[in-house]
Image (cartoon, rainbow, N blue to C red):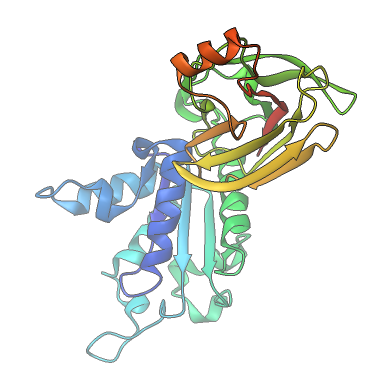
Length: 313
């Protein structure tokens, strides 16, 4: 049985209901979120499925938009019809003692008790949340946090909360180029104990140093100090650092020795983050690199570091 039930009216804020559904499915898993249009298989009689889900959920969300009180073809309000499914689902949740959270969309005001059928007038006594397009990111996170408070370990399903902050180096990389390793570095006379190091000796195995991590769409902000390593053999080098989110370049910084910079990147709803670094002018051809090394020439190898990369929820 799904833990979270999303109640909404077709023709009223259904797009917001879908947005909520997508967010909650990413955080809690599809099997724990019930939105009728997605959760009920085609060909299945929907009445029993709706009744069971609304009566047995752990959290019930009543999505209320600007057209929630719209009228039917006969001129009466849809909410006043005893057969109205929006009303029926709310009645079932209230009667079953489910936590019911009204979710107001946009500038919609909370309905007053006198505006509602008596069977769901209790809805006005519930603390509500709001989803507004100007603050949707924050509002959805607030909704997720409120649902977590209700779920706990309900029905044996653990609270899917994530730590407030995580060092990326504590996670298992999903991919990593051979010239990249993890360890302590010194950048601008500051020691960073858990860092991503891009350093080559003699030859570069890859044209770019790259390491990727799965964030599970659970974090909101990425931070790291980047720079040329204090003990770099070539003090004149510069390094280029790039952050890719789900394959898309989101930020890039160029640094020199003694001129570190800080990345702060929004990673809300990001599944995969890739950290990439390189030194412009690096000799990539093994044959040419070998010839230059034999002649005592530099191959312009990178000596770069991502200091203590972290993600925050």
